[in-house]
Length: 261
Image (cartoon, rainbow, N blue to C red; front, side, top):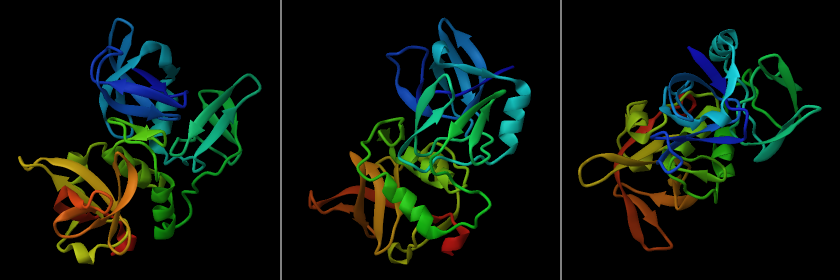
C-alpha cells in the first residue's frame, strides 16, 4: 500500500480519472491519504480523515512512508487559523489557507517525512478546552466565501464542506457529505430551541438531504448557498431576506456539541 500527503495549498479530487470529471472534494495542505488504485496519470485515493474516495493527478501526489502515515493518523494535528498564510523552507514557500493541517507542528516547524517547514501564523491548540465563541468565530471567518460544489477552501466551498471544516478546525472529526453528517448528534425538536453549533438539515421533494448549515444565535443560520452567508431559520426552513422567500425546507436539526447542551 502506498500513501501520500497534500503538499500543495489545494488539490482537486475528482469522481473519475479525468480533468473533465466532477469535483467531489478537495485536499487541503497536510491531509494524508492512501493510494488504492491507478489509471493512466491518475491515482485513486482514500482520504485518511473521512474515508472519501476519488482521483487525483499523479503529478500532485507527495509520497510519504507507511510509518509517517500511521503516525499521522494517531494524532489530532493543529489547523491553520489565518485565512491565508505560508509554509516555508530555505528552498520553497507554499501558500496555505484556513483549515489546512499542520502535521506534527511544534509551535514553529511542521514535518513531512524528514523535511521540516516553518509556519509562523496562528494555529489551533488542541490542549485548550472547547469554546463556542471560537467555534462561531471560525464559522464567520468563511463569510462571503463563494459556493463551489466539492469545495473545502475559503476560495470555494460547498455546504457540507463548510460544516466539515468548521467542526474540523475546532477538533471534531466529521464526515464529508450532508447525508452522512445527519446521522450524528441528537435531534432538536423545535427551531426556536436551537443553540450555536447545532446543525440544520434540509431535504428535497424526494426526502433526500441536500443542504446543511450551522446555527448561530437568534436563530440565525450560516451556510454555503451561492456564498457563505447568514440567513434566518424558522420551522419552515431558511428565509432569504434579500429574495423575500424561503430557499430551503427544514428536515431536522441535530445537536453535536456537548458544550451547547
